[in-house]
Length: 429
Image 1 (tube, rainbow, N blue to C red):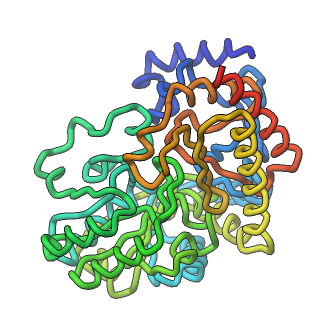
Image 2 (cartoon, rainbow, N blue to C red; image 1 turned 60 degrees about the horizontal axis):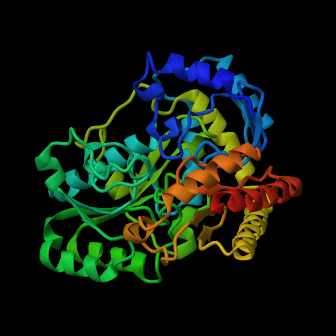
């Protein structure tokens, strides 16, 4: 496979950007070699600057449920671009999108639009501290909630991929206010809240972990979080930046029938454009300025391009059979992967919730950060590069999720299963 143009661009990029990238996992450090530079994408495929085409299961890290460059979303963006790209003022588009979000998520009576998932989480955390007048927060090991200082303690995603469990530059006093526990460990949560519950402002959790690979919550785990926060006067935040509108129209909270106090959403509600949102009950959200004293602002919040794309995206997701189609395709792909591993005698664990899925190269049951870290990352490195050679683009990390779209065809899936068999065989040696 010719990658000469990507190599040339990466050399140039390293002279003007840290590591040659604007987000760490893109550098391919965890899988060896250098990153591909993408020229274009349409439907289920991406094409790099050398003309190599790949079936894509990264989907811009999840939001492109309808595939790349969906014609109706592109049209909505183009129409709005002709009317102006940014106003720094209210628009009808914001109201319409907020109404669609609140209909899909009953726990979100009031929504504040922001520019990223990181900003949504940062703002939600500040809100809980302002409401409760408490400083401590609880997060779970391996869950990634963006790069705000408090959230980089024992985080997943890029930090886990790069083997960096902590991040320099975080003020020690702030880190001390971030408590961490193993994901899926209800007993540890109950013990912590029995001891420090009245000092904790909130629990923040990925209702389905998606940034150390896909890890579903154990039965009763989310209910424990709901119970202890109510008993202690703390607030419960669901980070649904990945899962919101991805696993179901109403997100993970609709699947597990647990209503958090605050929900954070991300790029999906902007059709893949830069956007985020956080929301909750009117009582909670009225604490945000200008109605309340907890301050948060942004010139690009509610950006009309993202709002136009998001309105079209949510209309399309509300159509018939979208999630049934995603479920069927995801099940077909993952069953094929499992059969391949079994035929080749390769030890692997498979997890899936809806159209999010992972294959972990370990014999350990995947339930938390500790079990994820038992994976054979060298095996994954060989597997990833073999998949790339076969024309399949997956996340360049053992610790990230894969994503199905509505536009992956039966042929795409069968081709991927065949490529997976070859890649596993090569990785095994």
